[in-house]
Amino acid sequence: MAGLRTSLELIQDALEKAGEKSDGTSEYQSFVISQMNQRYKQILAGANVFKQDLGEPWSWAKARYPNILTLEPPYENGTVSLTEDSDVGTLSTPPSYSLTGRILKLSGRPDYIRIASHTASAPNFTLDAPYSEDTISSSAFAAHKIDYDLGTSGGSTSGILRLFSPFRVYKSQAIDADRTGLISQLEQRAFEEKWPLKGMLSGTPTEFCQTYSFDGLISVRFNRSVSERTRLEYDYIPVPAELTYDASSVPIIPEAYRDVLSLLAAHDVLLDKEDDKAQTFFAFCQNQLAAMITAERKAQQNTRRNFGRIVPRLDKTLSRRLWVSRD
Image 1 (cartoon, helix red, strand yellow):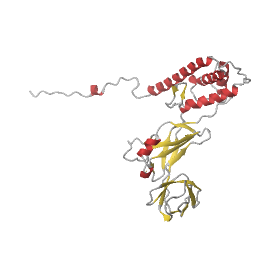
Image 2 (cartoon, one colour; image 1 turned 180 degrees about the vertical axis):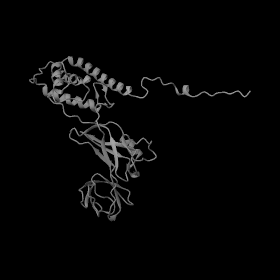
Image 3 (spheres, helix red, strand yellow; image 1 turned 60 degrees about the vertical axis):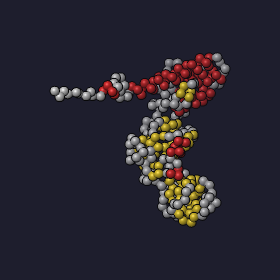
Image 4 (cartoon, one colour; image 1 turned 180 degrees about the horizontal axis):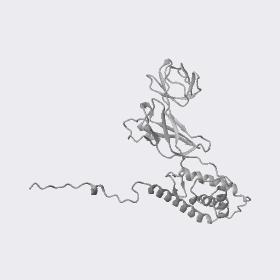
């Protein structure tokens, strides 16, 4: 096949490679489309495919512009009332927005309680479990928002496959930050050990962790509760549009390596047909994926500051002392 630019051409090529008709009559056509989409998302998501670790993010796959996330300060207006063994609480001064998902901290009480549901402007809200302490009729409180959802679920193109880099913030951070304006990721368990909820601090975050990821929706938690609205930026790899049997459908994989999709789909068809040629295509797929990884690494290296330069060792660049005779 002369060109392999569009999904239509790739699907037809995969069918031909697998010994099937590419005129729309093959019983494997829908199978190829399904498998090609699955492999496509695996590549972008950084899965281990055909014994190739694709975990390094692809620069060509990230969204053109960063997404913006606005962190919200705690809500502290008025007082809150809670009844022992009841999961319903009451706000004396409800906000005009929902407090669902926020962490409720009562003045003088040890617990941090999640608000399971709340409707904007409504005085009543529901806790994640019945309140276990003594009834309080009026207490000062703070409803902290430290968990945020990124993207949307359902596999739409507004979903997020994975984050590409740390968050960026332009407000001053705490002393434990390195002044780069970056909010770096920790594994969730390490995060919870380093930043336990019972010791929650106020200020601009310096670290975060992912608490949930499914079908284009990612939830993240930050190590500080901001005192004022704070803008963050983050780069990400979006959920791609589904590939279809259509000339207008074009994968975002660079054209030089786009045929990896037809190779992968052809392999899956041959494997399903128990055809011995599946092993040959397995090797083809491995080689093409390896070539993609190498090309990406070279592209990153070629744009580095010291690419192609001979950098001497530091001890060879230090100035030598000049010994001056006193004679």
